[in-house]
Every structure is written in C-alpha cells, then in structure tokens.
Image (cartoon, helix red, strand yellow):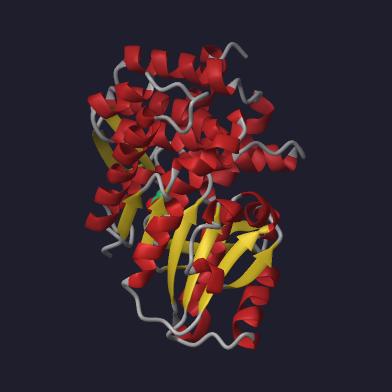
Length: 352
Ligand code: GLY
C-alpha cells in the first residue's frame, strides 16, 4: 500500500506537479460547502485544477451517508467519468472518507488524491486507505481499504481552523506520540497550537504522519500492528456515542483524548504503564480538552457501546494497551469490572 505523502508550502504548485505524473481523461474535484468556499481559493493558482469538474456535497458527519455517496456517483456518471478519470478530495475526514469510497467503487475504482484541510484529516483520515460512510446509525459501517494515490499536506489550510478543531486533530497526534517514541511524544507538548502554520507544527505533523504511515505500510488491513492506531478509541467511541445520545455531540478528537486517559488507566493496571506519565497526560487533557462528565449511571451504556466496537472478536472487547510510551500491546481485553474501575479512576483524576 505505497502512498505518496507530500508536505508542501505551495499546495497549488505541488498539486500541478503531482497531477503531471498521471495520465487521466477527466479530472473531478470533490468539496463540501465549507471547503468549496474557504479552501478551494487557496488552490486558485493551480492551472490543472481549473480544468476539473466540481462536485459538491453538504458538510458534516451527518452527511457521510448513502444519499451523499449516491449523489457523487450520480455526478460522476452524468459527467462521464471513466475508469481512467482522477478525483481530488478537498476536505476533512468526511470528504476524504466518502470521496475515497466513491472513487474506490465507481466503475470498480478510479484513482484519487486527498488534500486534507483539517488537522484531524491530515494526521489520520486522509492517510492509510480507510474509506467509507456511516450506515444504519453506525460510523464507518460500510467502506473499503483503498489508498489515495497521493496525500498532499499543507498547513496553510489550518490557519482558519478553530482551536477546537485543532485540538481535535491534535488528540490523534498525541496518540501517535504515545505509540511511537518518548522523543516524538514529548516534542508535542512544546507545540503552540495558536500557530498552526508554524515550521514546528509542520515538523511535528510530518513526524506524526510518519508514525501512521509506518504502521499502515506494515499492516495495511489491520491484521495486527495497525490495531495500535486504535489506542484510546474503544472508550473514546463510547464517549462519542454517549455525547450524541445526550444531544451534545463532542468532536471526535476530544472523545479520543478522554478515551486515551481511560485506556492509559487500564494500561497502568494491566500493563504497568508508568503512573507519572499517566498523571501528566491526564492533567494536560483536563487543562486543554476539559472534562467529559460521566457518572456511574452511564457505565452500562458505555460498556454496551464498547461491546459493539468493530475491532472486537466474538464477545471480547479488544483493547490496544501500552506498557510504556512506544511499548504497544495489541489484542488485549479487560473485564467489565476492570473497565468500570478505569472509569471510576478517570472520574477521580478529572475531579468529577
Ligand atoms: N484511524 C485508524 C486507522 O487508520 O487505522
């Protein structure tokens, strides 16, 4: 699954260079309402993109749907896309996931390029070939492994992101730090998120994406070590579901940050993850992400959501744990009691 990942300070020129290496008959550009309005202008210097046929979809995860997917297929069909066409997905994870899946399935697959416009998209969704849509109330329920030909990463898109969006993406960088090395992990805490277009951000982003790239190249279909990327997500997805049930949805990365705290607690108890690192991490999360409020009345629901996780086998909840920073232990499980203890400790640490 070789995937070209390019970091650039001149996104329009880089796009033209990349496209020049491909032979295609028609070029399509997929945007959502936001990226069409705010990000497309940053590519106005691209001569090649001026020739693209534009397809637009509604933004947000709620539109990562079969209807939106069908509308993209319809446009591709009506506008004579062939198997030799090329698609560019310009957007956050919703656009790159849905656009990647549309491309992967149209006429059994056309090539595509991702240009992530959010930090979360750049560090996670756009890289590694997971594509798909939500279905039947379940996130990413239908999809395919289908890597983009290239991913073009430019921090120029991040300048207009809210602090909340930046922190959401940053949570996945924290996860990449935790599963890689102490140096990569520690460097993240020196970053100033008020300067998303800085050289230091670009350097940390390159390092973080390299962590994901390395894991994905070793295990593209998540048979083993790619499961390390699920750290924080078993509990994180359950928190995210609870936030939707409460009609107060939280951003994915926020749920991951709180999920990381819980899964480091489980790691501490089952794998001896060092307490001092855990405490400092939890403090950082509390200061920057705030607290996701739970009480013991929520435990049944949270546990039930964890039992539905895609990563589980049979009736066992699958966790990725750590015995230290960079020391990943995949295919672990924890009993219901152990999970409830971790939730109790999370509440203690977060002052709930
Ligand atoms: N987002 C986790 C993965 O790509 O495997």
